[in-house]
Image (cartoon, rainbow, N blue to C red; front, side, top):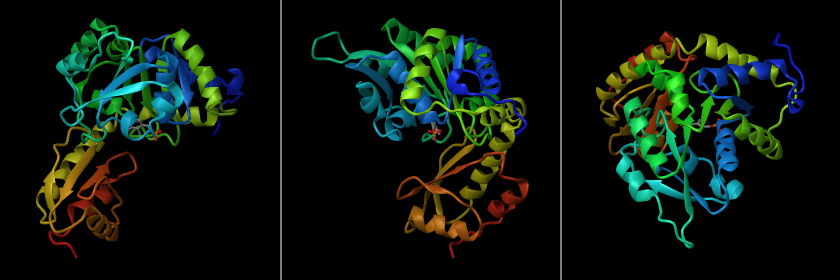
Length: 318
Ligand SMILES: *Cc1c(COP(=O)(O)O)cnc(C)c1O
């Protein structure tokens, strides 16, 4: 709250400018744009880098396909090719199959979108080799690349890969400060100066130009400086929780845990809603993501004491 602020609609908020410069430098790109949400950074990335009648390609579980209301059609007038990856992980063959031949009746395949980590895959992720190979395939087809890196720092905490290496692979990158990094609000779009120049105008027309946003941006800077290094704690808690879940009668299957997300299937005859209700009686909040699946996400507000509520859960539903 002590941040120096100004009017970011005029580009005059020093703290917002500092956050944008910091993130651009981190990924070796020219510029960045602070936005209210990750949905907005993704949608702006599509709008700023495609034309109507183009097509974007992504996995069927991706946030851009599932949870952004078909915004690619609404804002950008583009088609979508959805690939059926392995828990959200796509491969070169799928891209080769997905790219459409040039014809008047086909949309122009234009942008490959990779989500890393994969939210609905259970926080699983691509190795950097896989990323490089996919991007090479995309570029061979003349596609540009966008990374939905809402949770990229959770990946980097596990792999040790560098932001600069990631920066080279993508035309644009979206990072959420408000997920595991713990800032109250905000996401950042990172790209070339030319793309961000236009992206600023798109942000404005979406109503995302903010005035004294430096208070929020300061929290983002704090998150980058202080909260990246603790992400492994969340991963450790996710793993320990998964072990516990494997031992109770009301869980059928726990997806493999790779980062800070645990997805599990409840055992018959229970529904996810029934189990969520039981969990809330034990002070554990969660999100049923289907009739049978529940998702837990670990973040910096989950303390070791709260872990006890998980580790002491009874074997039988009550
Ligand atoms: C959370 C998330 C987003 C953006 O979400 P907002 O709620 O709009 O900030 C985008 N992609 C992925 C993979 C996410 O997990």
